[in-house]
Length: 478
Image (cartoon, rainbow, N blue to C red):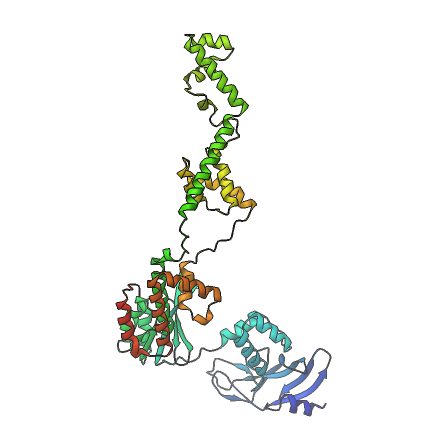
């Protein structure tokens, strides 16, 4: 390929450029060229000069050809400015469409990278540029974006105002949107009323302000654009409705749990009788223990000697027992007082009721509270925590029957405010059961559906009727 053909293919739209040589290799296309215009224009004063001062070579990266990057070795000249008062004594000529001041890329490669940066920004843009045989870093692409001039700000007729988080919970700003074109207009550093009012005063012409419900935005809109109509968008309207529904569901949160079935009186009576039977058997087993028999015999013997008038010291010598032991037996009215809690491996006052608890566990009753109430009816004097701690190993060893966790307030709120088609079959059934149990929540769900249909159809003329129906049902949250 001749130099003329290369020039026609690669630089057909450029004037003032002469291609001297083209070298093709496996890795790149190297073009040697030089500027050939007769004069140049000073970038400071605009004067045309023909006086050449000196020259040097620029190395430019150009758009790839055939998957290979193009490198242009360009000889340029430095001209003297003819205007004596110009602050620039000399300047370098530029070739329109190819070079720009201080640039190490051609204008068309620069334009391609700007588009890539705007579409994909940092890392993703750098990966795409590598595929295009234009190796640049993500930081370079970000610098290209920052170097772009800001687009001209056009005051919108319908202005959207909302906040955004620079650091959630700490630092917030305000974003202004052209609602009709859905494009951002400006960003404000905070969400203060004075800042918004100042922006509106500097950009007159806003007719409708579609804003967040924050009082600061309301005050700023009133001060900056007193003639503008303030409205809320559909998202904020429905968001307000969702918060009201959540408060309503929270007020009726006791209705979210599936009620326990009423206890069968006959079954309760049978369980109490069985508990008494098992408790008596446990006491009999304890009293039949050999250590308990020895304690009972010693108690009778000591009290018999006391009946004969012997002193505790004499009884201690007679039976070869310590005086404190004799005193302990003498103070006990019955032998059961001395054997209470001993020799049975008891860890707590729950021992007499353990057989009953194991039997009820095998029957499927795993509620510690319910079991505590049952054994308390039979004389248990401990608390709920004793029964709960004792049942904990049983829970770890055997998995009790699955019991569905009741839905939370947020779950039910989501089910009521979402479209029915977006609910699963199980969520639909749970919501139906809750609404059947609670007439207030059922009425709330009906009003939510009516409001959603009215909002989606933009049937604002039905709003007054909807408000009257809500007031008639006495739903203070709505």
